[in-house]
Length: 114
Length: 115
Image (tube, helix red, strand yellow):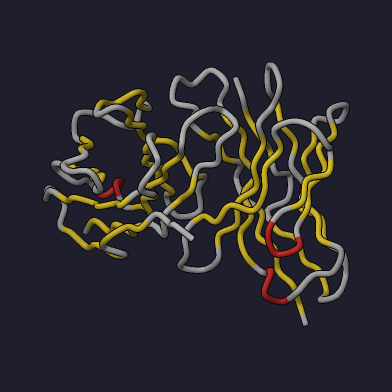
């Protein structure tokens, strides 16, 4: 069964450093998402990406964040200058599209900012 | 605004007993509802969804959920719990006002099944 994959599983970085989180969505999916889950809190939406551009972003997704689909398979989330409060589990998801379609999530990347 | 609420932070059930994890929703229009499960150190796994049709939806691992429009609820159920069902369960709703059809999650319910 196809699945969403993410690398690395755990990233530790110093405050102020840049990090790139990588995702490989399910191959025939068209819509891609990043969500995050701060420890003990809800899973919250960050950004969606369709047709090579951001289709929607949340208030969390400020200028420090960017997303890219550099090739036909990878989907990346970059944080330019990490802050302590960026420490969280980051989930990538993908879907065919449409309200009825299921979003399938990857296993997540745990980001720890020291 | 679209939202879901999970009133219980934790549910404890003995193995073999039926389990229910509660979820209520607030949606303008027809809801698209989902249940996801998160096992320790794992991602969010899709269990089941309600789009339209039968109010009883069957999903993975023997789970089912009952959509109740009058009570605006979508409770997750299983007739006989297993210790391996112990995990964090999230109810979620598709944001009908989102151009990207993003999902809005509840706060999660930790299910603990004792042997």
